[in-house]
Image (cartoon, rainbow, N blue to C red; front, side):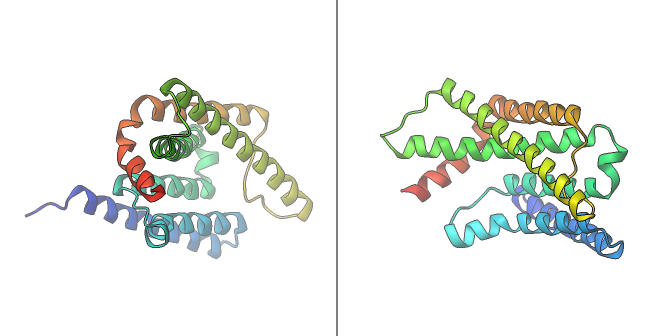
Length: 204
């Protein structure tokens, strides 16, 4: 029996995870949980982002990167149905993975601009620092968004779409955001050469 290729297996896994997110959406609808429904809808939309980029911008993400993105939004959706509260490490895992994706996309885009244009030059050390600071800045923005969402939900008398558990939780989130960026900087840049080439070709 012939085994499927890695790309085919990644696509099948991504499709299975998309169906899992749809099931989470069904749970949210059945239980009338607005926060679960909204997060699942956004997660489903994100899973179709690689296809939209390929169709509208001719940006072809690798099956592996597509799988990582789908995994991240699936984990977040599952977290909204109790895993965030039930498992102490779950929020740390999702923040590390999400920050890694942000760092990967930021690195690939910046590196592609560096290769495409002679007007800019990003030395490796600068690129590493930039990658870390960019990920942290977006992490801070997300924490502020969670805080504002909680205040707005409280004022409206509904469940918060994004949940924040206090200052200690915010600090830990930023620590694991940093970990995600560091993992990409240390181990992921070589694996992103294909994405860099795709973005660079699109800029040409």
